[in-house]
Image 1 (cartoon, rainbow, N blue to C red):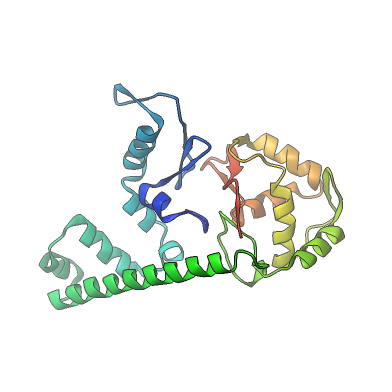
Image 2: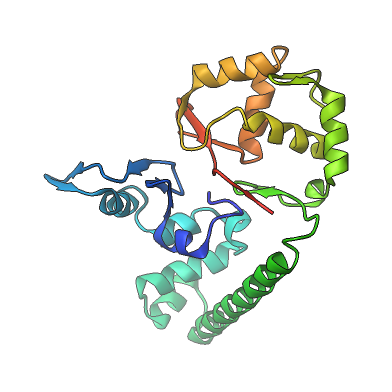
Length: 251
């Protein structure tokens, strides 16, 4: 699912544009600008291919976002179901009949969801202003693919350096002594490790394993798992290819 650093514009269209590459937010499929792609007996450019991919593979951006569940949208199962009915244009009386409620309940839910959207816009504006105001301060680094943003990100530059000095015997190339159990320390270590992967490049799993074994031969599988779990790397459903979630950090 889309991560912390994705813009509203990217969410609405379902893909990002980075270095002339259009990448699906939901499965990682990429389309390179300047190339032509076959689609239904015709040839299309990269942005058109990306848009068609969203429609043919994920149904719509609406459906793909809703499929992320409460963790992604903050919506309950009932609210998600109600939104689906509204999106499909289902009449209130039919919705009421299918859900076993009265039409007044459906109308209230429509109002409640509009209020939730209004509040979300206000919160988004507040948080954007907060980030702009605090940009020059020692704010926590939150990478674009972050899946669990909490107190583990509250680590100063001094703390980070101490963790790095403690757990790495070398940084060029990086050599990890041990992988700590504390989440904050894991995060700092993973930030160092992900720098060994080039943004915009797709890595086959054997190459990912080779890189991670060079850093921590004792348990490279654990490193790979946490890079995925924390959203530093993404991978295809068959685990055949991996790539860096995004080429930048959000301060």
